[in-house]
Structure formats: structure tokens, C-alpha cells
Image (cartoon, rainbow, N blue to C red; front, side, top):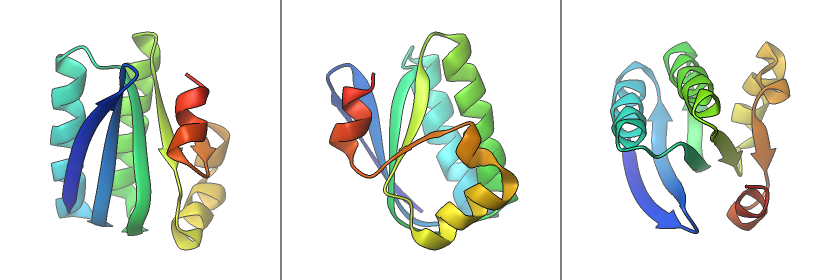
Length: 110
């Protein structure tokens, strides 16, 4: 899993590339937890290059969403691959996460 991070308008934007499987979820959790300990609670995940996510990855996302919202922030998802979006729909995560087509749309909603 390759994760890049940048800041824009006070929002931390992570671009994910690869599989969010058990190993990728560990990398993702570390990156997101590090950001939260630095006081960053407004986050966007660009998931356009993620083709697979498993329960470990979903748990990581749910944990960070809960932490960010408790701190007055949020975790917004951008450009989900149709297969990944289907997983979110099946388990009902599309009801909890704000999902956008573009990063600009997600930024505008903060």
C-alpha cells in the first residue's frame, strides 16, 4: 500500500494506492492515527487507486471516522472503485461515510 499525504485548506488529503488488505490496513491505520495525534481531524481519502478492501481496512476507516467526528472533524471518501463502493453498500457503510466523486466536492463540504 502506497499512501501519500498533503494539506489543502486545513484538510489532510491522503491518496491511497494498492490493496487495503490486512497488511495495507496496518499501513493505513498508522498513517491515519499519526495524523490524528498531530491534531488533524479533517481528512479526505482519495481511493481512486484502491481496488480491494477487506474487513481490516473497513475497521480502520470506521475507527478513524469515529475519532475524527468526536474531535469535530470528519473522514470523507473520494472516487471509490465500483467494486469497493459495492462493499460499502453491502455492509451499510455508505450510510455512515460521506462519499464524493471528486476531492474538490469533498473539500467544499467541510
